[in-house]
Length: 150
Image 1 (spheres, rainbow, N blue to C red):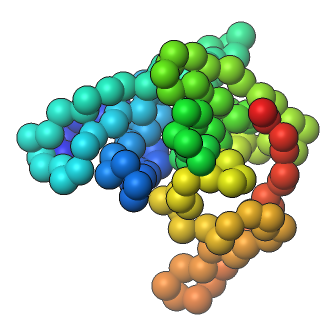
Image 2 (image 1 turned 45 degrees about the horizontal axis):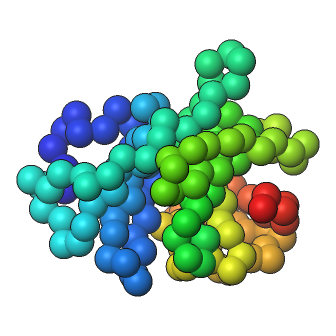
């Protein structure tokens, strides 16, 4: 939809049905671009959230997540091994790590949340999910963990 080079490396894409906002995560720039729907190739973001946090080594790569029920906070899984928690109004960010995130946190969602993320995962709690390729082979098994982040 967007011209090549719009994003350094796109991550999750999330549409909020209630607010009619498209959110696109740029993993390498650590930004979330927000667009009013409908979107065209010429659309410009009305807001950018981020950059999300980095650790002392300069790592940080948010992937996908969701907003809380009133859209005041956003929670993203970060491939670098933590959750990125953002407050939308202030565009402020903090990192929350957990021993279960040693291989990264691919996605995240609040409960209750506004809608499910672009991953189309069933609502949490979720203990195991197999992503199946069109050929029928299992791509990878993910385990979801419940974590209180405030």
